[in-house]
Amino acid sequence: MGKGPLSGVRVIELAGIGPGPFAAMLLADLGADVIRVDRASAAREGRTTGGADFTNRGKRSIAVDLKSERGKEVVLGLVEKSDILLEGFRPGVTERLGLGPDDCLARNPRIVYGRMTGWGQQGTLAQSAGHDVGYIAITGSLHAIGRAGGPPQIPANLLGDFAGGSMYLVVGVLAALLESKISGKGQAVDAAIVDGTAHLSTFIHGFLAAGMWKDERGVNMLDTGAPWYDVYETADGAHMAVGAIEPQFYAEFLRLLGLDGEEGLPGQHDQERWPELRERFAAAFKTRSRDEWAKVFLPSDACVAPVLSLKEAYEHPYNTEREVFVERGGHHQPAPAPRFSRSVTGTDGIPVLPGGQSRDVLTDLGFDDIDTLLSTGAVVQS
Image (cartoon, one colour):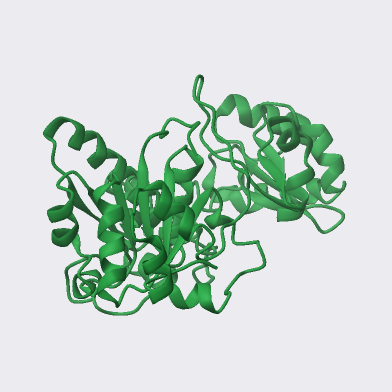
């Protein structure tokens, strides 16, 4: 707490799963004091992921019985002394708990109330259960991912939960926080994964409108349709990623691949002969191992890189040079991002346990009935 550009900003996170915790982690990485409100039962039962839930790094946890009046008052007391609240329940849940936007704004008119859902706060699907794959499906984004003639390919839950969800929640609450410094008023931020995922595809929709993109998988420039924007298997069964779009980069790609000036090679934009061009690229890549090709292409302007596994990425020379990953507590994890010229970001990398800092949080924020809150079970110290 306290060194990044968000030093001095206090965030209350009502514990959830997925995109909400990740958004709170990002704010913590940037220096915010993030207090995670866990369920009292989680602290009593000692629920833990073995110290590997990295989205809980850099935070403090207080375990509260949200269904008790005393517990609700504790959370509202935290709200009074905070700048942002994040929650990821279905619409209406926090209102029923007495912790909805109106309740919190009544206690702190400047609070920014960030809401993270899949479908949004209104609409016919707002109360329906869902997961990343369904949210990106309904936006058309899932349809666009995959090879020609094949089914849509699921991009883990990176596109929906974390790009369309967490990142838009963070942008929204920080924009509202900035506005509140001018207006003196807080507000609720409705961040829905469907909204964010659709917004992320603006570039493709522009291409579609201009007639430069077909509403089909695997036939376009950036979706493996073009042979110079694809992945190729190497002699050892690994892969190289190729993104040689611009003519000067494409020329360098051909030179390093050993096809520069080869007789009968189809032109880069001769789409009718793309299958032939793809075969020539594939045959060339099969002549060496991935690591051998990596030495050929890196560094260069050919826009080619080895496809690394998650664990291999930890040890790649470029990633170690730039410290893209850090090792904390015996585990590798992504380092905070982005980076700043003056503000220093960082993390101890140690995930908090439910209720691990309950007494500390109550003391730090000036509660005067700490022993009573703990003895009655309204708050639990693990």
